[in-house]
Amino acid sequence: MSEELRAAAIENATIGAAEVPLHVARLSHDVARLAQTITTIGILSAVTDAAAGALLAHTAVQIAVMNVKINAKGLQNQELAEQWLVECDRLEGETAVIAKAAMLTARERGGF
Image 1 (cartoon, rainbow, N blue to C red):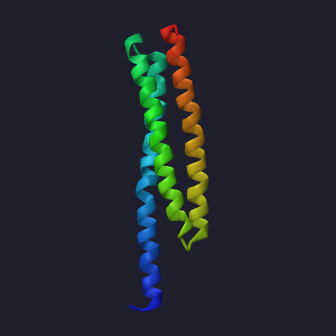
Image 2 (cartoon, rainbow, N blue to C red; image 1 turned 45 degrees about the vertical axis):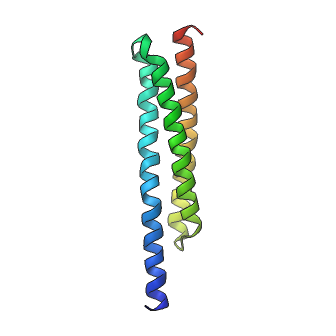
Image 3 (tube, rainbow, N blue to C red; image 1 turned 180 degrees about the vertical axis):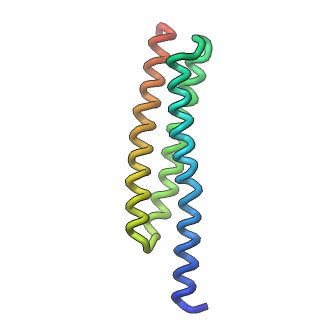
């Protein structure tokens, strides 16, 4: 295999290795939003479970983002890597805010 073909194969494998956890981060962000909504409008007995779900979703985003970032370091396409990093930072930041809001809402509604 030529060096160019080898480099292209590694690049494609790296992209594939990062796209899966990036998708997980996106989905986990959505889960956190849904869980936070439940803390606001759900029945009282479900608010702590929903808050826990938001926290777990935030953790899932953090783990997925670490995987994307480690793969982005090895990517030759720096423009794509930068897009991933920007999206990861946004997802991680937003999910942190969502999880905190879910906890605060659960505490407020639960009276503790």
